Image 1 (tube, rainbow over the protein chains, first blue to last red):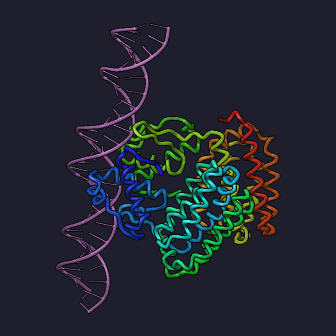
Image 2: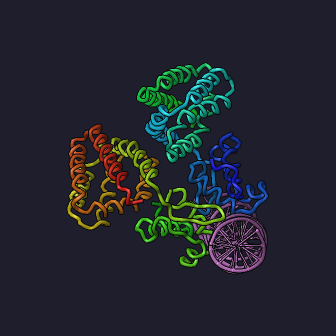
Image 3: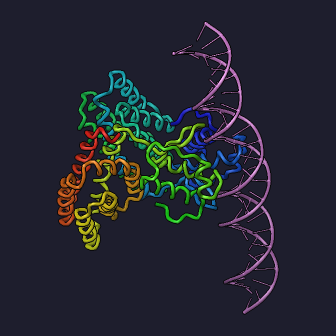
Length: 215
Length: 215
DNA sequence: CGCCACTTGATTGGATACAATTCAGCCGGA
DNA sequence: TCCGGCTGAATTGTATCCAATCAAGTGGCG
């Protein structure tokens, strides 16, 4: 993200971001400035700036004169984000496949393997994220990468809820698609990889959309 | 953008945004907090929050302990933004075409006409922006729209420089493409419109990329 | 009994004051 | 002449204090 920022606001933002991503702060929970300020032994000014930053990242909702809440997405918003991802991530992958090194590909294969092995939800989420984001690593489009990462962050809590719901046996489609994706990457099949990724995201979107019990 | 915000930071952000878009604040110019604060008869706190917001929008670059500058894009960044737009705006248009009303289409036709008529650079820029953004209006994807608008904002200054460079006689390709686009919209040809828009943006990107004298 | 204006407490927004950091210019020395 | 460190003014970052705003609870009135 923005690394070991020496600024107070940066540290607060990073900590809050982590707390939101890990689920310690659930969607809809209120964030009180003073409370955060005391917890981080600072004043409210850096907290306010951190909240501004997180709002820009889509992790927090700010209401003037009212307060800050961990962003809560309804189904329509989730679907919209997935549909945007369906366009952006294939581009990132397409730009990247040709430039991935053999080491990169080996690493991706290892991640795909690890994803299939782990039963833990949090490991699954982390590895799946690593797998996809690293496959875009050589795209050389920093703004695009930043946007994609922000989307993964804002979706994280809903991905977790969904992953818990489907259970380990519900992941076979993911594993299958990852294997196809890896094959396309290995043969440097740019268009094939793009299309597979698009379908991968689209299928996930559709399944998520049917799951009414997440929202 | 976010209308007549009652918050001080919102007013400052809006004013600074306007100043950047109109070119009153050129790319690379430094923005001093105190100076802005006195100009708006407020303290530095709201100014800082406004700067944070504008940074998130990509209009301002913030460097810790150093200062704020109007964002300056190099050619690579411009190209990247255009390439992202090539994927996002066709989606917005594709979602919108089917839902545009006859009044919407008439309005778009009027804008396309006005674009061809005006010799003024600023009018051209404003009308062209209106034309495209309004064609996406019925997409019903608010986040996508917000992203697209931010891109138009961050590109505005470079669009202006480019438009000045090519002169009125250099706009024939734009006019031609707008006419084709209007025809596709009128026959509700979703895929045709998407493809035409993609090519429209791509051609602009390529011409912009050759123009080394803008950066 | 229900409704509305008011009060009160908590919370956020903003102003002022102070600390930390940067950077340009200067000085001394090799 | 060039280089390195020093210094102080300018600027940003943070803390503290006060004002504005909102929400919940209260009491009076119809």
